[in-house]
Structures are given as C-alpha cells and as structure tokens.
Amino acid sequence: GEDVEQSLFLSVREGDSSVINCTYTDSSSTYLYWYKQEPGAGLQLLTYIFSNMDMKQDQRLTVLLNKKDKHLSLRIADTQTGDSAIYFCAEMPGQGAQKLVFGQGTRLTINP
Amino acid sequence: NAGVMQNPRHLVRRRGQEARLRCSPMKGHSHVYWYRQLPEEGLKFMVYLQKENIIDESGMPKERFSAEFPKEGPSILRIQQVVRGDSAAYFCASSPSPTNQPQHFGDGTRLSIL
Image 1: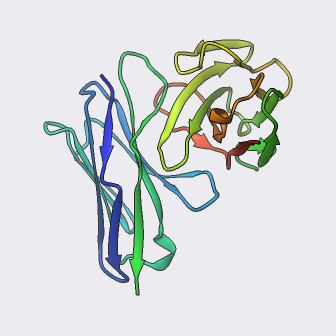
Image 2: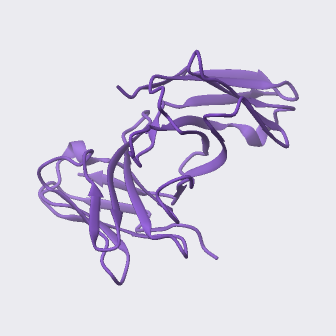
C-alpha cells in the first residue's frame, strides 16, 4: 500500500541545522519530493530526488534517501526564521500512478 | 509567467449550495491534479485530468463531486449540495507531462460551509 509518515513537530534554534525525516512504504516509488507550506499559502516545491539517487544538495538543502529502509530526510543548514513552515514529504508511487501521496507534514518552529 | 492560478481564494457556501473551484495550469502544462487538505492534515489526491479527459478519479467521492478540464478554459472542480464535511482547502497542481516532472501547486481555494 501507499503510506507516508512524518513526525508532526520540530523545533530548532536559529542558525542550527534542521533535519526532517520521512518514511514511505511503496518500494516502487520513482520520485520523492519535499514541499514547503507557509500559513495560508499553497505548496512550494523545494526539491525532489529520483529513487536511484542517494543524495541531492541544493544550496542550504540536502536530501538523503535510504531506499533499503524507505527513509527520506531533508536537512536545512543554518536555519532562519523564514524557514518556519510545514514541510511535506511526498512520494510518486510506481505502476504508472500520477498522484502524489503526502505525509501529514512536519511543522518547523525556529527559536531565536 | 504566473504559476498555477486558482480562484476564488476563499469561498463560503451554505449547506445544500453548489461550489465551483477553478484552476488554470501553468503555461505549457496540460496535466492537472486536484488535492484536498483537511485541517491539520496532509493533502489527499482527488483526480487527475488532461484536456477533455479524466485519467484517474480514484480519490474523488462517488457522489456530489465532479471535475472537468475542457478544451478551452480552466479546470473546474464542482461540489454539489455541499455539506459541512466539505470544508477544506482544495489545491490544484499542474505538470507539463505526467512522468518525470514535478507537480507545481496553486495557492488553493479555502472552502467554508456554513
């Protein structure tokens, strides 16, 4: 089946690194995504990784994929107040399905 | 170029009325997806459309909900005889092709049922 799990809350100090974790169940997933949602807004695509990759880095963002454990993480370096938001992990299941399956979202809070 | 455009941003309806939500995909995108987000939850897939075709409606409730993406004009998500449980944020996404391309989302329509 298709299921994506995330912890609901994460609190970090400004300037520290944030690591948001996600597990998924569909081993045939082709792509995995991270989206950011600020209050009252839509989803902003942050980054995505193809399932045959282990890591992808894009400026302050690093995505790590452990396909064996079906574990995905997003690391935000030097976390800033503007990073406060809900972060959603999503998978694109295989077998030709075009729908995204989302986790519940992790609310990231930045402490001064 | 504007991104995915959804309107209205907020929609208030009384129980029993109809709600019509519109979505214009990004320029060059011919694939549209609708998702629903209940309060404090993640997004749940509803329907995937191409121009004039419904490709996958496995997430759509069987009654009262319908979607279309006509040859001309925006995609429409229509909810007839709305009930309180339909209160949610409805997001539209688009992509240029269905495979190997990320979906880009609009800002959503927040539907409130009185």
